[in-house]
Image 1 (cartoon, helix red, strand yellow):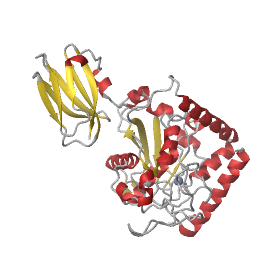
Image 2 (cartoon, rainbow, N blue to C red; image 1 turned 180 degrees about the vertical axis):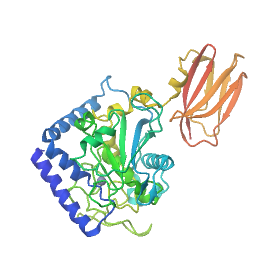
Image 3 (tube, rainbow, N blue to C red; image 1 turned 30 degrees about the horizontal axis):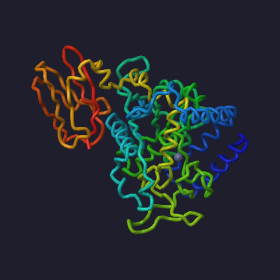
Length: 424
Ligand SMILES: [Zn+2]
């Protein structure tokens, strides 16, 4: 697609969204297409470069050369929040709120949201989740301990594609290691405070220049608003990993470059009851009104398989692939079992650890009476069990831990070993 055509398309979308906003003042309008248009107008060469880079990444992904890190069990990604004013629209923005917002974000991406199973029957088979886990950075760019949350005096306007770059850059942390989220109440600096958020699509230019970002209204963070509307943050992270609105470019398949999301116009509404049908699009198909990338903020519930495939690809873009590499995680403070105790697997053959997967308890058997330490970690590197033992058979109860992947780390004076276990 030519740059002219791209810009024309984006300009068209911007026009439609502006008129929608004028009529409805819809608080979920995130204006990502508009700010991307502004950016590409200022840097037309970047539109071509980014498209070339994406195509190249997709080719690399398909062939999976050994130089690319193999797919991890979970894509851990560090996030830093820059908060401008601790009261936004009369709502408090503090550490507890931000931590809750990250939890909600992870719930949505991982399909642990409470309404995941209430998706309309037609779209249940299309639901997809992502093994991605965002965490607040524990080390800052200089390697000092941090909460991953920085507070500044009140400021506004950082969502704009132009005019605020120096301010955005001044507070940014390395865009190749941290997702930077700027929390402001008036994100466009135009006196309106109902805009919820904006995110920029992947761009190496932006990451090179410390401009890659999500800008979000603190009044709409979970739990400053209801749980459905709070998923607008999930919508913005969707953009950050290259997802497009399901209504982008109108009712022309595949308008959002995803095969399984029916094209639609924005915010046609949720289905009024579990038995009622969803609104239809111009082809007479039901629309996926409950999709995070639509504007129906009263019923945000799901991504589709096609969208998650697109996120998968974006994770390997040059501007995103560094975010989840082991070296990045070490420098942003995520401790994982192998780095906590430095597993050397010298004693792996001495132990039998079973069953895997496990429903109730894990059995650990060893013939030698030498004392050994047992630690069980979740995928965030948090220890959920620690004990010391010297019996030939011991049990670790797993009934009370959530389903998922765990690491059993065993060590003694002569070495250590790690085994992955899935709790059903
Ligand atoms: Zn959006």
